[in-house]
Length: 170
Image 1 (cartoon, rainbow, N blue to C red):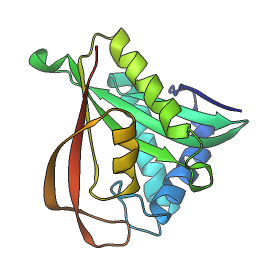
Image 2 (tube, rainbow, N blue to C red; image 1 turned 90 degrees about the vertical axis):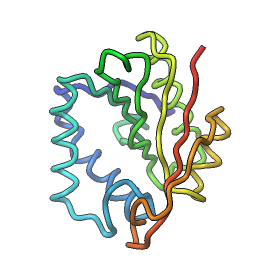
Image 3 (cartoon, one colour; image 1 turned 180 degrees about the horizontal axis):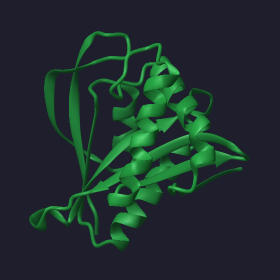
Image 4 (cartoon, rainbow, N blue to C red; image 1 turned 90 degrees about the horizontal axis):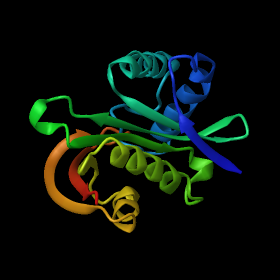
């Protein structure tokens, strides 16, 4: 059974699993800011940075199957006075062995529920254009907004476009 819960600063024991998840995602093609193969150092640095940001408003969830981290997602609420109604969804990652098993949907449900509790009316995110993630977000009710060519490099180092999605919350 897969469960999801919020990550806290006290969850340092989960760091090896979070690093392994990031490495697995990058090594299996996720364009999330790193090139494959991803070494331990940058993975640890990334997750230590996330842990620090949890104190300043970033929210993060992990999906667990037993003690194994199989997914994660973040919600970064806007702190500007005129933007407190929106938040950015970041780094939705699913362990390659657990894709297409509902992990991403479970995590997105957590994000959307928390956003509603906080009075957010709009969520947005970006993802690699023409990636399997596009079909996933569309299946979750997200609307495609704009595409920017040559925005990033794929995990293999090729230029790719990114596409922005948004979802209005009732």
